[in-house]
Image (cartoon, rainbow, N blue to C red; front, side, top):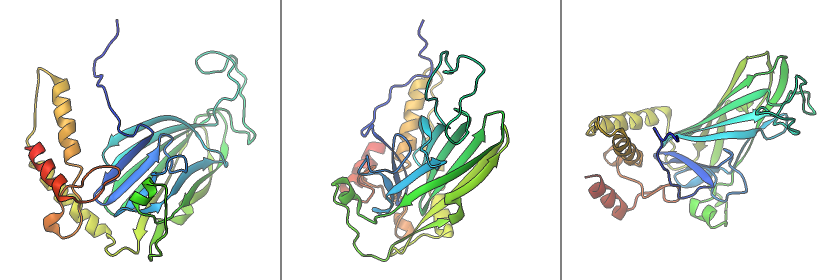
Amino acid sequence: MESRVGHMPSAAVRPDTLYAWSGPSLLVVNTRGECAEDQRLTGYYFRETRFLRTLQLRVNGHAPWPCEAASIAPDTLAFTYVHPEITEPSGGGTGQAGDEESCDRDGVPERAIDIRVTYSVRAGWLDVHAAIANRSRRKLRLAVSWTIGADFTDIQEAEASKPKDHGLPYRTRIEPEEALRREIDLSPQQIEEVAFRVWPSGTAADLTAEDVAARRAALERWRAGFTRIDVPGNRVAERIVGDNIRDFASFPLLDGDSEVWLAHQAGMPLYPAFFGRDAVTAGWQAA
């Protein structure tokens, strides 16, 4: 008998990308969790300008094997990888028929490393966090690096595949920079964490940590006043309503004067901006 407990259908407007946002910040990645050339819109945007065009994780110079992609919340994406993947499966669900341990050219046993990458989008920056674990029986030394690049193009130009650098004094800051390239030693079952922050800089109104905290607090106060729906007889319906409320509450622009922080954006991922018609529509739909 097939079990469908907790199963809910899902629909994706852009099935080849995932995206997360918070106010004027937006991250778009492909299904491997990368900002790469195979998808024209991928990147990290701030106020509709792309401050990262390229964002790719490498282990010993190789892309890890993607296992899972998840949208945790409107502002959070998570990806799971293994490295290196099995190249010649020999049987069984693990792909390994005996006790022999195959290794890649760097001496790393197949599927020895598991990696969980989390992207957390905040109104003023992007946080990148990677937890790297050694699941083998030996100590391993790894070169973990991130390839990054920026083109400072407008989001509409990116969608049209016509990127332009408009010569504005924009900069992308990475803190700490040394997190982009690390040599790490991992004992069996040891986990090493690598994290950095991507700051957009040089715009007319960069956001400080205090600015972001104030906007987040205002957003949480607004959300706390929402009606809560409890449907004991139909938890699926309860979840549907709750997810829609959560999605609606993710769209405030959090930009400009504090009186207009809660004005809604037009839509994600292509229209992260205020349009009067869309704000009015969001209002009556929520009611």
